[in-house]
Length: 372
Image 1 (tube, one colour):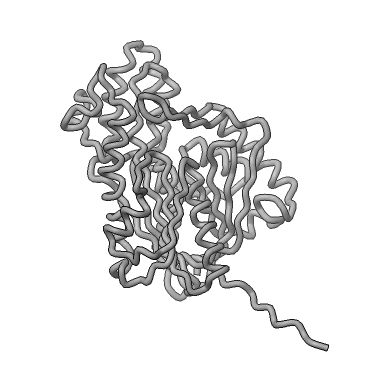
Image 2 (image 1 turned 60 degrees about the vertical axis):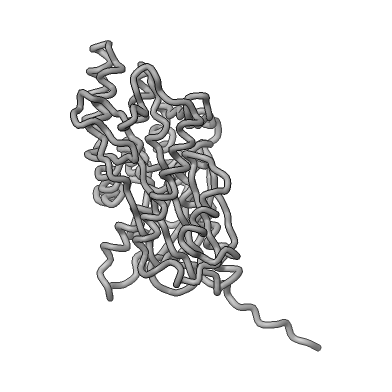
């Protein structure tokens, strides 16, 4: 009679470090000037002004340089966003090819030490705001000096919840190959897709978005953030609430005003159901110390807080990221996690947390973690 070989628990993936980067140009006030030019209707401008004041955003950043005065609107030195002559998709993609690698490299440079000394075995890049081939994965490997034999994966066009999907890939890689050292990059140039329009809903949606990048090192080394499990869910009948289409004039986003209410309703049902297969994994809200929620907008954060009946300060890190940076699509959640890591006092007990992000589908991607 022969015995079965001992089974060992799979390795736990940890986010050891997160680097973040913003482009140099602060453009939030300049965008208001641009809207003034595009909204001749005083009634619509009044609605926009009221909603902008409620956005809970103080600053947003772009690789595009704004004018020196608000009245100049939002334009590049070469009139990239010239009134009446907004660029086509090919021009926008050329800008993406030029600037996305630079912003990603800035984020990688914020990680501890030279990335070439980290023994990177896998590179995961998430981005939904542009396309280029050879891809950003290959460009970054070449520019950083990472071993070109590193395995590469691109997570494309998934929107705001791509951060969770890219971390999940890293989680599975480390679980199956404990010696793996995974570089996860999220880079988004959302301001590349401004539209010249008098549609108030579109202008309010564009009010949220900005540019940013993050880089994370994920390994089995037990420090930083331990990634425990991942789960995906969708809200039936909500596929048309968030859409993202490629047009001749850039990528066109539709963000329905019913999104926050649907999220609050769905999360409220999840909280009441309290099932092991739900987003809370059968645990009570009080069982989680930290809430890393994608800062998609004030109304989204309010919906999460309302639906789950969270304490008033539970979403403070997410609200701070929104206030200081706006919505950077897939990079945003990584900024929230970076803030949590930076705020952890060495030597204090681990904290349990749950992360979540929402996007087209309408879908939610979530994960549990421990901040060590």
